[in-house]
Length: 491
Image 1 (tube, helix red, strand yellow):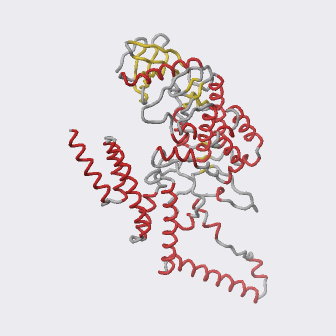
Image 2 (cartoon, one colour):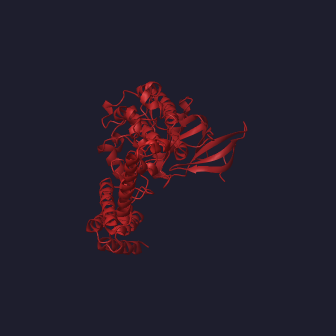
Image 3 (tube, helix red, strand yellow):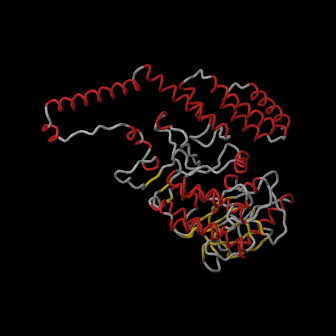
């Protein structure tokens, strides 16, 4: 274990791109701290050293309840480190996996927004807002951390990463994705994306490759919110506008408007305590909303489409049901026509002819429903009709996923899984086979590009992904042979 005078290091808490964080005790005060220690660097990575030092000084200059506190910053034998408060209540990423109510989501975003506005007033742009960088001091207090790529507008520096963008694509603003200059409205956009994720359970933009996500951030409009959150749509549209000048003037204004909606928007009151969770298929992959497809009618009900919600209020008697007010399993129940039957006393008080009519009505209704049920679930023609509907829906879904570059991720919502299910139903479907071949061709081009750049590991990864789509794809096999030859020549 590393030794730093004045601190007793206990265990490793985490590792980042340029630093390692340890659980340590500050010997002079006997308090536990999180000690962030910079990794060893070479001469070509001096900009990381500058960024690490700048992060420590920037944090030390920010005194805000929702920004992590720095206790000490120093250097010992070329080892740069700083000690900060230990935040023991986990990250926002963990909270999302457990589930958040709309009320909790708004209150968290308002506090994080307050921290961002304070940083902006002190000329610091965070540039890497995401759930992993928001920790909790106690169950109710989110704390903004990791200012490693923050931009101080008072300091003229041009620190970049070699061969890539600074930030996390799923939360980056369009201007940040382009590599343009950013200001406080870029952080506002990231805060809006984070808010969207908290209240829906899925990211608005997600794809198989980071560059595809960046392109979505630049060109695709923000998706529509679920119907029960529609009162927030205009707010989301402004804060996530592709043009920074059309967003709210500041994060402070963003928070004022959101707080006003929280306190006064009647359409939200019935949903403030509804809990939204990530899809249970993969807690680290957030599923998109596919409400434009009526999948529950045509596909197996074990294929989730909407995020899981808990605590929804029961609809009042006489009100119209909406898709957000009941679970997937109950959708079919609300689509069955019902017959109003008399009570036992009413039945026997009616005349003989009316009683016969009631019995005949029940008989023929039962016979008709039974016939339809048998046709759709057991007859050869009915099963064939159902199969064709499933094939058509899966093909449409796969086409959408291909267009969104969701080839093999996220789990449960990607073209590979949709096409595999389709071919299990109809093995000779030519459109599905062509789409598999197109995907393999895409990976062939990417693998060849990485091979030319001598990035062998990345080329190998692209080949592996492509062969999942078409194990005998001639182009991929050719690139694989070239890769093996190149690797053998370098040994």
